[in-house]
Length: 115
Image (cartoon, rainbow, N blue to C red; front, side, top):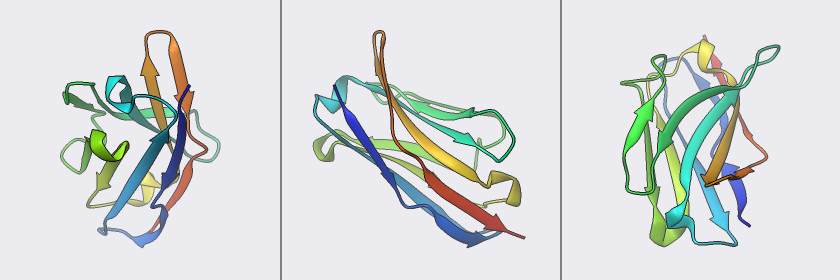
């Protein structure tokens, strides 16, 4: 079992940056694949980025080149560095950790990008 707590969201102007954190507790964080998802009002939750247990990364086309996912296993924390933010990045951002069939979600953190 793992508990996930996101932080770092907020209000930022277009072109600005934010760094989201996903703090994990309750299990061996290093074995989990960690992903970020987001959900905008009235839309389905969508995948943003993933970092594997060995550090490999993948990004959605809409954020590639602007967002960077990383992890610090010693701190049991994953990050999402978001640069060149756009109004369409406005959403609640969720952290997801998975290993095998086990999937855990955080409660989400709001990111609002003003134009």
